[in-house]
Image 1: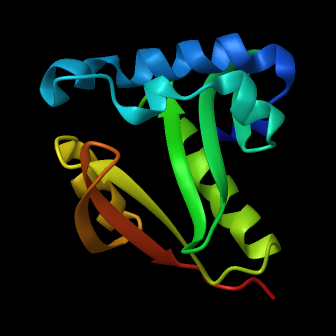
Image 2: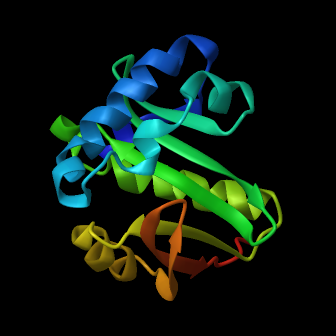
Image 3: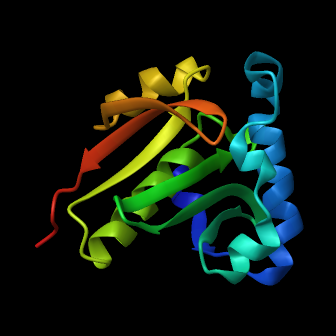
Length: 156
């Protein structure tokens, strides 16, 4: 499997159960570390999909990744990036992040931002490797979060 085989599309109403299951599977390993479910596991996926904020990555017709993104007062925000555990390390997450960057550019943003839980130390290594710069740490919604921003290169 390669990221080129993955297709990212807007989530549809019928994707809610598969999207929630994918996110649960991707984030389940963090529950014990954080002491409670990570925020993406608590989202109302039917509502997020109805609001036009969710995309899915498909591989051979199966949902293998989920992206939740939207505009905020602080800019273009990536709320959730999840790849099914059996696909982690294959480029599904990267395909979703590249899709988010393209969407932010289309909407006229020069950067985008995201956050991760301070207990998800793997992400604090990964995000800087792909161009994200830490700019804040704060408690939000009962979670200790690390915020990152990435400047976007404009395409000609």
